[in-house]
Length: 123
Image 1 (cartoon, rainbow, N blue to C red):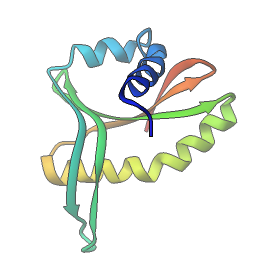
Image 2: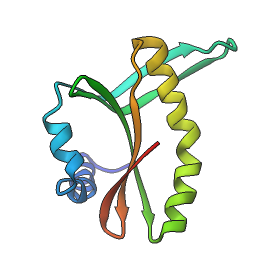
Image 3: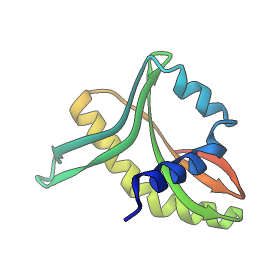
């Protein structure tokens, strides 16, 4: 486990590449912004799903759902593999938001280290 100062330093280092990306300004200007949103819901099949959504925000009347990833990705193939790996998780988050909030969020993965830059992949 990291000491609190080390954790804050790591978070600043990870968010550094995000600040020049256009999504940073969009997030900062959001009408509503919620971080680490916990949820629990029961699916139509009767099983319980629980987790925490990294970021859910509303801009221009629409909702966006962003899941941040710290994978170090170095080429297009790595990005494609990572998107496919994380797609089921993001789809669960979308279903939870639909069910609990009755809105349709636009989902995206935000990779914080694609050759040192942030990259957002909309799904």
